[in-house]
Every structure is written in structure tokens, then in C-alpha cells.
Image (cartoon, rainbow, N blue to C red):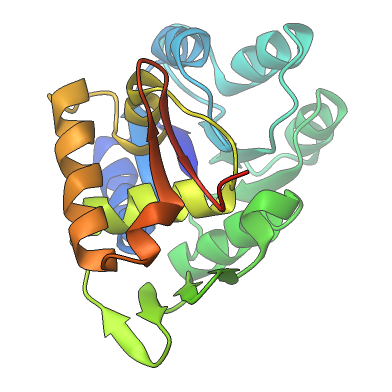
Length: 224
């Protein structure tokens, strides 16, 4: 899973793409204004940005310029209905990693997003294993040995994030920012409750991999 910022002024097209990406188990924050996109970038970290060129407030190229100027390194995919080669060249010169003209095929766009995400080693692997647990991110399934463990969507997203960042410590607020969308009303108590449900489903032995560090947060991995 990845956290994606989708900035697109066409609300219907944006909602369609958001639904597709969430169906692929990504967390998507959607805005329709360039200024709102910059505000989101100042408040949260994203694995990839999808920016429409034509937006009210600031256009997508201006958002891209500011993002790179401020040190942003994450992949950026530009969408444009203009279809002009000079727009594509300018976007790539400003630091975009890919460019698609409208109308686009949602399946192709999804494929390009996956290709960009594979550049990050922590997001590239489809199979993540720790001990007797194996998570298949393509199928969206978790197995303990040969037994499949059924997880609710948010349980799956939280566990996948922690398994992709093994032995790294995250506070409850970090996890809210990484796994839950910005418009969620979830709280740190919700994180604690989700962790508790995951532990119960993992079973007595494997649950020890999901550790709570009092006053600091959570991490997944073998104890040192």
C-alpha cells in the first residue's frame, strides 16, 4: 500500500480514480485546488503525488515546482488535458517522473503508479515475510504458514505498513498520518484498538512480532 495525494479539479474523474486506487489498497487523499495540495504536502508525507495541471488556485506545475524546491523527492505523475508537448517537457523539466494526457485509461494510469512505486525498495516487494507470517500485497492476503488470516481492510493496511517498515518505531499519530486518510475521524485510541484486533488474529506466538513500546508507539519485527 502507498499513501497518495491526488490533486484533480474534475471531481467525478478524481472520485473514480480514488475509488480504483483504494480498491488496490492505497490510502488516497483527494483535493481539487492547488493551494489545498500544497497545504496537504506541508502537513503529511506521501509516497506519490498525482497532479492535474489545470486547477484553481495554483496549477499542478506550480505545485510541482514548490514541492521540488522544498526538497520533495517522492515520485510525481502529471495529468493534463492540454495535450501539448511543451507542457509535457516543462513538467518533466520541473521534476515530474511521468506524464499522462487526458482522457486516460484508468488501468494504464494505475499500472504507471505501480511502476513508480516500485522505485522505492520498501514498496516494491509483493511478498513480505517475517517469521511464519507471509503477506501477499498483490492478492491482499496474509498467511500464517498455510492458514489464511482474515483481516478487515484497515487492519490489513496497518499491518502491511508496519511489515514494510520492519523494526521501525511509529507513534500512534505517525500511523494515523500514514494509514488513515486526512478526512478520517479516527483517533489514537482507534489505532490502539486496531493493533489489539490484529494481535488477536495473529495468535499467541506471532502476536509478539507486533510490539507496543510504552509511551512511544508501535513496531513490527523480531525483538532485539
